[in-house]
Length: 350
Image 1 (tube, one colour):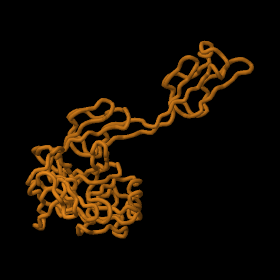
Image 2 (image 1 turned 30 degrees about the vertical axis):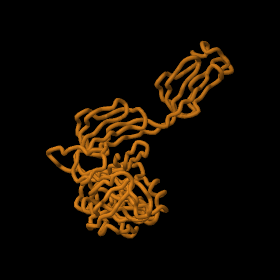
Image 3 (image 1 turned 90 degrees about the horizontal axis):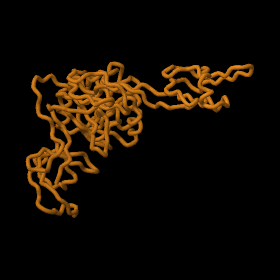
Image 4 (image 1 turned 30 degrees about the horizontal axis):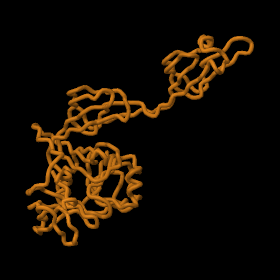
């Protein structure tokens, strides 16, 4: 049975595709080294097109209307600018309904491109550009720690990680945040209230890495203008010992939160910790089958996740203690206890 793989790796090679939402301009080159905060591409989004029918408004044929058009292709115009004007005693002026740029002229008509906002794509992680995807983005190769979470708010940023986490089961309170944390990425525990997310935004911070979040704070996290990464799940869930050790030993390093997630493609939100290594470690595997010896995380619906080692795959269908029949495996927990777990509840960590 294929296993769901979650990467929690102290050292690995990370290859990520970074894409614009629409076609744009790539501003880096292949083999160029980039920092996480570097701009790598830019584009204009949200543009609209307005057609000004000069011939119709002047009550002329398209051919006869052409000489009265006073703008050129590519020209920028402001709202209310005169773009066409008829001659004679009863001259008629035609003005623009909005600011924009003339993109098409012909047939007695003007097509005006209006609106639009500049989108800047950041590298998101420090590494080397290994390929250019024409007009859309790049592929970046990096080395560091890789930690994937369960939920993110689809934002990206980078900064120095500062810890407010003393114990894996800590809850983050708004009172713990002060101006000394401004511009940092905060490693914290559980967030119970939306007011904590607001307090982080008021500083502002550059990101939050959380063990878990309460359902009543999810909307605030989703709307935050900084990335929020949840590692363990919803409701109060402590950070696993493995994650607690890995994260707290890398405090004050530069980290990147890529909180993008896509359920259809299986893309998980993740944290990348930049590490200065001279040699590239292997890339992680995204596809694995369950096998003895794997480190696994047991995802329970009503209690915190547990980590252990898969010791044996049971053949066929097993009957679980709750009476449910399903494919299952024996797992030895970190405390030495051996339990039977349905395969659907297991994620391979690696």
